Length: 439
Image (cartoon, rainbow, N blue to C red; front, side, top):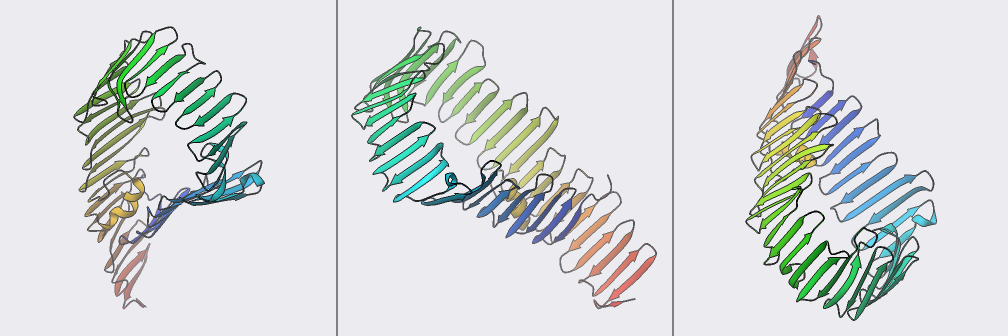
């Protein structure tokens, strides 16, 4: 405490560089930033964030451009390196084995490997022909989604949409339909203690019943996405009861253990609690979310877009972090290491530590930081004036005008980058004139 544990350099809001034990950061604001952590060889870079950013270690790398074009690469001990580039229409991958090599131009033709949950996905003039595989499961579709056939040792699927469909995973579920969505039936949870059977006669009536009758659910006048006009259900084992009316506008639910409760009067009020998590909203603009587990306790409050408050407690480490934003006036943040920062004017309306770090100094009226090593920093008017200090050191800067540094070993100041200046190192003193003359 009281000594700088980092090397810090700054020019106005445009440039910032800091080196700490095992870490380094450099920002050419707002164009480029780089952060490194030596122990894990982690590196994070941005270019006009959020236009481009990348993350990488020795074993993997991820990058994205405008969040539509992404690339990944990974180093595997068994098969070597593989890389992928994905865009909305064009994608390709390469690596040290044939398994990692693929190419596609949607919707004309192509093949994907080990993506979106499948080991292989192929298409030709989509939706004319599509084929996908996972382990021993293989599915083929012609004019997707109208015609499909799939099978494996445990699964079977057949579809002539909308006339007939069958989807079976032996020992887990069976689903059937005729003239979808009008007639649907099947059973689920076949590998559980109480399998559930359901039937739907769209849009008039639908029901679910467990095999022993402990669970029942009924819905009347069912519409896609909206649910049922009226519905109810119960489970005798847990004492759970659920009711809804006017589709999703009114919902109520509870159980005998009181670890589940739901009351929704949409869009005016809603409260939902299940186990260690609960959510409350008042109108679509106010939300309050809470979590209480053995590992983390969290509390988040939103009043969109003007107010955001977040608090986390990491129970195992007994450490806290908090974040407050009164958009667009004020932002406050304290991380789990004890570093504190606040600033006046923060124009991005939601929490984003990367956006805050890169963009906030461009328009901040006041900035303040208190670091865990005892150092404090203060800036005003887009860092037109900045000072840093501890119990033993003081540094101040006015871009193009003044640089001042006072430490136990050294005192120096420069006006107009050396038009006139002074420097003392222990007992040695120098006076600087006209940038080049030292006396």
